[in-house]
Length: 66
Image (cartoon, rainbow, N blue to C red; front, side, top):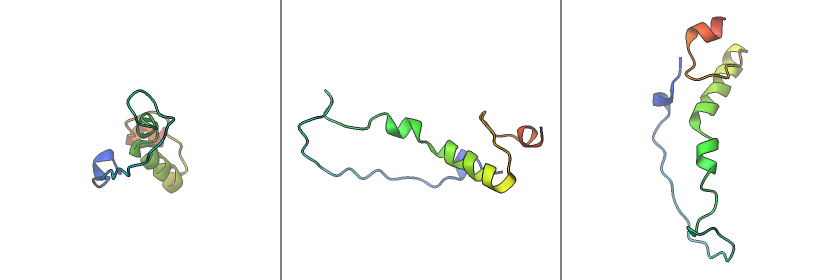
């Protein structure tokens, strides 16, 4: 059963971009990383492998069999 620890380390590479329309911190897309995490990707992989859609984390065997 894959878990979040099975996902390899990720490196964020920032590319400088001049933009006149940004927030007070001077950045865009701050919340995007929090809403598109690796847990969702692993849940989708479990669904594709088993046909069972698990909507609660952590994914455990009893949730797959129930």
